Image (cartoon, rainbow, N blue to C red; front, side, top):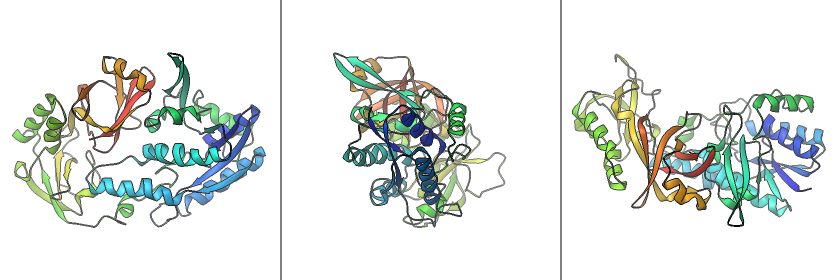
Length: 395
């Protein structure tokens, strides 16, 4: 039997992980990650980590396993929160949950678990890991969860082979309803607890208040781009023919103020993201306004009417080499030659068909059909069948 540290979040999923491993006869240790100290920007009446850690402790006591709280708030601020501020300041929209898994749960937290003599770290992610032999060497496949409504493989798309070698996902083969049933039968206090929302191990955050801790309010123009105008059509035609980073950069530059007309003002381009509808506070239009692009250098937001505006559409995206991840490097040549790839560029979206090609300085992901609201700073995850094979931050 193995010594296994379970990352207990205070939710039902990680609680059932601890239950199952205990029933299998493993030596189980529960660790709760305290990643946040500032309750001023959370929307709950009570700082969520306190309630969550209490629930995790109750489950650990019920199961008779050791439990402790691990304070990682300092390094979380350094690797995740400061990164978020930096990315928003550049006009990009980061995904802190993907980074939390790569930088905290399966790096810092994993190191702490190994110091305790753990053989593995187990989490409540709805994802599967498979072991295969390639030229006599074990490799680890990262597979989507069996419950397609709860599949969380996207959030783990940046994990490497060492991290996967030490990871266990005991509920990846279960449906959520089965997890709830096991929790109830096991008498766990979290059996009926609602799933958590918001930032990884922080809670539901008021993003404007959160960003204004570091990013200053700076008034600027909101410029509307006509969906039938020359500028919008020109940019859509250009992006269909892009060949690499330079073409993508030109496409990503998109509009200038001369392409449209000023229809309002905003409090800082860095507070907005492509595809955003809420928060513009500009009415009187036949169709809702959506953010087409933000220009943080000139502090301008470009908007257009309707969710089908050509300024929201993309035929591809670019990933820089230094922001890419091959989950199994041995799959590189097979993936680059495959016409059967699917990808996600946000969580909870339907996978879309794509190809992956090597370009100067990185990789181009090309779609067979135009896609909406591709956002710089988010992650794209590419699948071959049910396996994540490649991922990267969108340029």
